[in-house]
Image 1 (cartoon, rainbow, N blue to C red):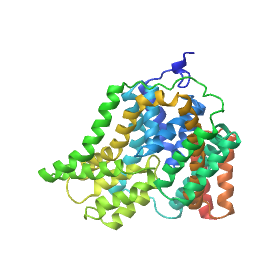
Image 2: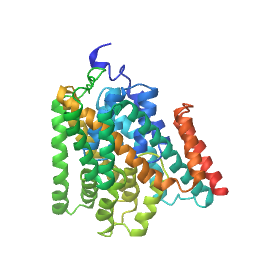
Image 3: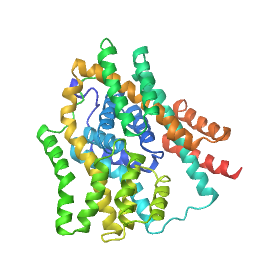
Image 4: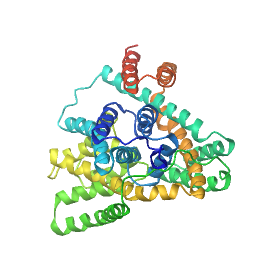
Length: 404
């Protein structure tokens, strides 16, 4: 097998990428950390698009960059498997569209899920997220923190994330892992599996990074001069996506500042959409589609939803697309490999922290919750049951718990 493709497996097709991510977009409940677990199970373990070490390196890169980390990882896997930008766009579209359409429907009043059954389903989805994240932590810990130095880095990263909340803690943990890796992990075995080469030219990467910089400041200046509400809407969501590290729930305060403070969306409407976003699969950033549809000033509705949705994801896509051409040259150097071994171990610690808060704390309230989540974990790890089946079974378990 050629060295250039050993980590990535055989090339695929755009159609294959779209269908794989459509399945994930319809079944990936539980937030960004859970999504990384779903990706790992479906694309790394089952389909073998990439080896686990390369996947962990990619996760570490996306943790560094602003934007929704799970969507950036998915986009990158689409680029890798689908042979370029079209593969990445297919992955993003398929993973994002289901939840965006559901939230758009909610914005138009299609919120029929009420009562104990609906609450039970939502609770069951939270329980399956516990199992998915626990599976990811367990599997990645065994492969990425197998010795004392890397296990120690993982624990130190967990402590740092616990005691330094928010994106600063996550970034600090990644930096700590890199520095500790340079000191402690130089004698670890060399990375196996060859190069992780993305089909992106350095010129295309540079253009993407320049486009990010232009869009970060350009629309704001043009919107003020042209008095364009469409540009103002694009700018508000682009800046929210560009200035958030960690993704997911971290973006909510920024969105509240951009749409609630100027009076575009009422606080009650904002919170109602946020609640709906917890009950749908796919990335939490699709909350932007709901907000774009319900903003007071035109454009709103479908047009506003499309503008907001594209704008909030675009900065993360541009940044990761611009960085990927340079990523392999960095990660294959000996010192870089030592640093990446440390950052990979740190990712395990970050995932371990997220397993407790918010995943565990928001789902496990009593021994029966623990029992259902444990059963889901066993089905995933020992039974090797498809994740979407476990999602359905655990949702039914949540309904049963609600009826007791």
